[in-house]
Image 1 (tube, rainbow, N blue to C red):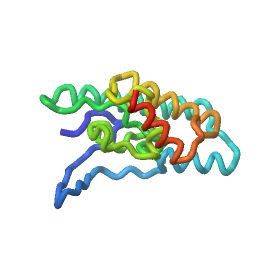
Image 2: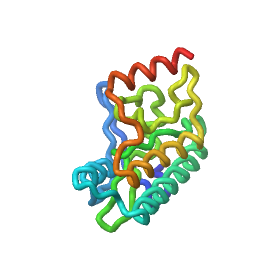
Image 3: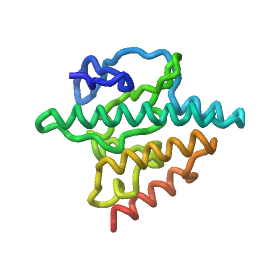
Image 4: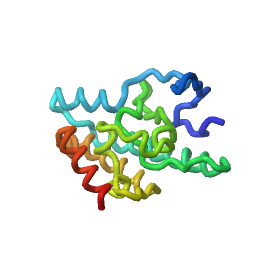
Length: 171
């Protein structure tokens, strides 16, 4: 069943073949938030505050709808902490759409990529990760910072990020 929210992309089908997953979803004409942030950085022009707040509002609406949807599914993982700038499309008509509602978060540690780490709340990286609504608030806050400050909140190399993650998991 698709997540019932205009700000969450409808997943039409999930295909599993030879240990690989493919997700079939509706098409949205627009750019990823990550691409828009790169353009803003290269032009040295941050997003307008109203646009940043609207994108954060749409992302939050989609996260709430996703959480409610998965809570109604018996045995389904409750997704939290999967929000990244690549996971949002800012559509041509201006609304932001969550492209992978619940997919990354439901994969847990399997979804931890170096590019997703700056959006993860510190408690998600601990040896016994905590994933709840606070994780989503942290991710939205990081996205807002990036849109308004026109730079990433955390600047570090992939190796430094990996070392910090390993250190947090040992605690």
